[in-house]
Image (tube, rainbow, N blue to C red):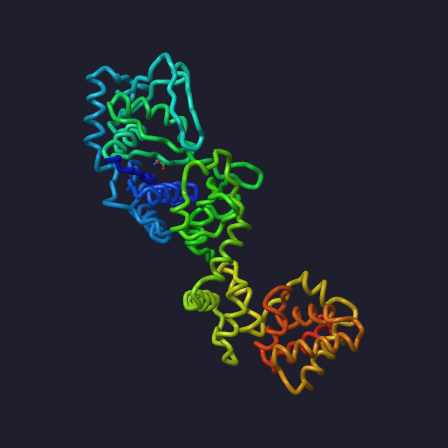
Length: 441
Ligand code: GLU
């Protein structure tokens, strides 16, 4: 029987969960689900000061939020401490490690690296990797205070958990040469390695908090959907082939392989993530969108019961145009409140033009006099007005939009006016015309 593939996500929960870390979890999960293997979770909580219960809770919350379900029990690294120290003793007994007094603080245990030959392995992403033994150095595996060092704990836990493939960020490549020697010393099979490319910003530098949101929790707060973030992060270093981008978890797991993983740095393009999130929001069941819509408006202190009962119709317009939930209050304020803000650029371009005030008044008069007030009748009305003035619809549409909403974008203008209703439309057009004449806008 073929051996079962076992992978693990082994985060050090020392604070907020960085997207680079969770990207490693996603690749492990995709590979495990692709091959029908096990996706294990090991919490490397050996940094006792920084591995707080809150940090561990935040990590588990992020994983659940993203749908990264793990198999079996969580292994907490600190629970293995006795075994880590026992193995260090064994390495000492076998002469593969030695004690040394470092800086007069007590004795450390140091692992011996080979002095000649090469250490090499085939990385599933980066290809053949080699390092001359003479370019490596012996390294500490137990500190003078008796605590096991990352390298020892990490390798021993991988052996304990029967890990067959180690998928992690390429900041661990240098460690891998050390770890391979530890696996050899312990007579354990060396796992296959896949080191994922660095995530970089638009300038090609490592992506950091200075570039924008970097922690999973921030994306969640900003109103990104877990499915969209998952999809986007899965494409940081992997391309399924063809022009496929929007994919379900199941489709991604089916398609995943290392042959399509890239070794070159992966650019974190927040515009692409935002676009993708919009695609996911547009496809959301209405009830889910509506719940988020209400919650965001309530949090922004906006009364969100449509004044004229056109709730579903408003949602029809807003849902397909929403890129992140966080945009909802600003995008919809025009609908719910009379104190909607005016975008300066839009005002300068569309309303500070000659004749804008007169034009808004003319439009108001025509709308007031029209027998009907429907999307189609409004469109016919504005078209007719444009023809009568010999200017077409364009010079009318934009100023009217900015006048009634304060913004240059949003739903189609006629849908917008119809949603507002005749009374509010007229009041706003006339109020803005008056302000323009007074010079107060
Ligand atoms: N705790 C390490 C980290 O978060 C684990 C690296 C690994 O996957 O081996 O970077």
